[in-house]
Amino acid sequence: MAVALNKEICIAFLIIISTFSAGCFEKGEESEEGALVDWDKGLMYIDDPLTHDDPRDFIVASAVKNETWGNSSWAVFGNEEGGNCCEHYLAGTKEGWIVNFGGEYPTWSEDRGHTWNEYVPGIFSQIGCLEPKPTVPGQEGLGEGSIVQATNGDLISMGWFPYPSTSGADQFYAFLYDADTQEWNWCFNRTPEPFYDRSWQVEVIGPINGGIYGNGEYASIVISNFWHQVQNIGGQISTDGLNYDYFSFPDRDASLDIIEVDLTAEMLGEEWDFTKPHKEMRAFPVPSGGLYFPNYFIDGRDAYVDTSLNWWSATTLNGSSLPSEYCAIDSSTALHCVLADDNVIQHLLSWDGGETWENNTYDLKNQTSGIEEWEFHSNGIHDLFVLNVRYQSSEGPDIDIAWHVRDYSESLIPDVKTYLGQGDLDSTSGAGADIRFDFASMGILPDGGSFIAYHDSTDPDPLFGLELLLPEEYQMMHINS
Image 1 (cartoon, rainbow, N blue to C red):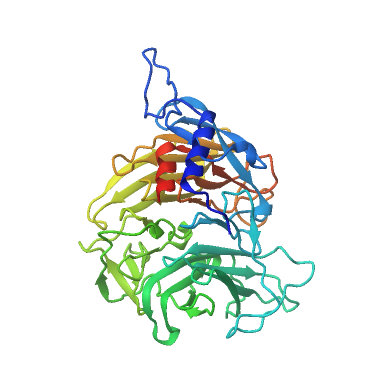
Image 2 (cartoon, helix red, strand yellow):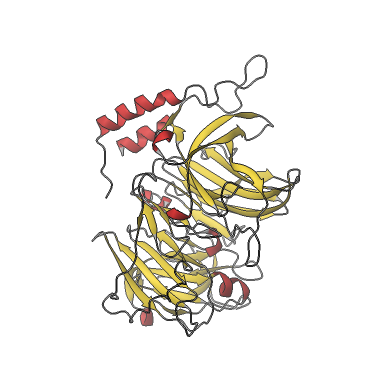
């Protein structure tokens, strides 16, 4: 476990590393001559870049004007920290871990990327689970998975091993980090489907009274990237985080009983900044209980799984559907939805469970021939929203950008944009592509630092960067908490 510094040492450390930056970080502040000055005022390096193995400078620019401001150092990581040939699957925890299940097993860092751990299961399965089947020698490293933190602090994750045996049958291993015991457990699970692909995973807020699926503090649903999107065959569900059973999904044109779902909350804990699954799960946990699937049905209706694991056709309290498949609630109680269409991305925010909306538009039509991948995260404690987009520039190469919206409760206009990497590589998703970047992935740490996957010509495989230069107020808030 990482050793926590006491507050006095942390404050002294921040004072020392503050010499790395000075200046100003005001939106659009200009001198009399019109030139932007001191863009980094109020920012401090939470970590000395030189203490990382691979610090790199990324270009920082105005989010609203065609102006470059300077450079910001990020720590950069690769396959050794949990990725594979084509992607990283990143998540954060309320304890400050960076977790990655891009490759065969879960990996994590408890100290902002200075040291890394990998969980590899032993030779025995968890009591109550089926006997494990090891991977075939020579085919190690071909697994991939998903991971996210549950509201009780557990880490729920599922690994897919596509070529583990001479029979060729796919295998699934659940990996559970128990927050109470601070121990990892694992379980081999069988599935009726012969092909699964990268999984997406999410918590169903409990307590769960799941009938044939059992009872639990929460439930975990895992879906297949391939089956769910192409044929809607269904997913896997567990009420203990280890033993999974098949869980059917309703047809996209099904007619189900309608239920109004309350998406509001008076107060939420910091854990709600870490429950958001990857956007391709197309669902988000509901504070009052259950799981919400916006725009699930082909006619635009939403779906909902309740705490008894029953499916419903859902509306918000005002009888409406949400505007996008991609939504999440953070600790501020804000409901964020993001809509991408025709090289335009729209960020919508509601404080009343989807009855009224604020919005901001990111129009990339003049910069791109196509948006390839994107993802978003928010942190209610820091009033921070970060949008990451990978797009093919009009000149050819792919560009990785992160927009930071600081104090989104006051304005949805981004404060700054950061160009991740060199922007000099043309890659795409999907098997058979020469250079692959299959999906965007990111997270935000409790100190407000984001970590985001990207790809450029400096490495044959995707990388991810960890933000080091943060607002001083974030760091003081983090120390005081």
